[in-house]
Image (cartoon, rainbow, N blue to C red; front, side, top):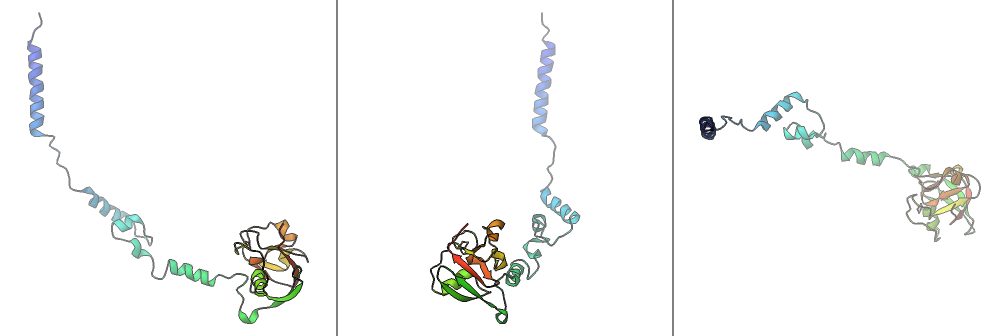
Length: 189
Ligand code: FES
């Protein structure tokens, strides 16, 4: 026969533990919001920088105000204003070259501070173009006197390869005359 005494004792003990823990709880006393304390510690351990670093913004030690006055956009604008390209030539230093437009049957004087395309249009010719930024070949022409870069300076042309330039091809929208030459407009490699 089974002795019921151990079962009864175990049941009573289990009930007592459950009752005791539900009455007293865990006894853990939650601390206050630790985030402020963490931020304070970080503020002491991380030196302030001039950058608008997120940590600095959170503790009020930096943020947008850390960007020096007069910096940022202003500096970029200044750089753009001072950057020079092949067309940035002082008015009293502009030179002119005799350029033959073979297909138009005309010889004209072109300034060295303006692209060939613009000056050709000023002559009233309907010359081909698309982007006007050296990023396609719609405006290309061929200088028949030799390698293009012996006669023009390109302002950031991105399409013609060295061999094509050596064959005389030029992008007239970004090509500034540097010597006299003959050109066939509307010719592409
Ligand atoms: S028009 Fe596109 S490169 Fe000249």
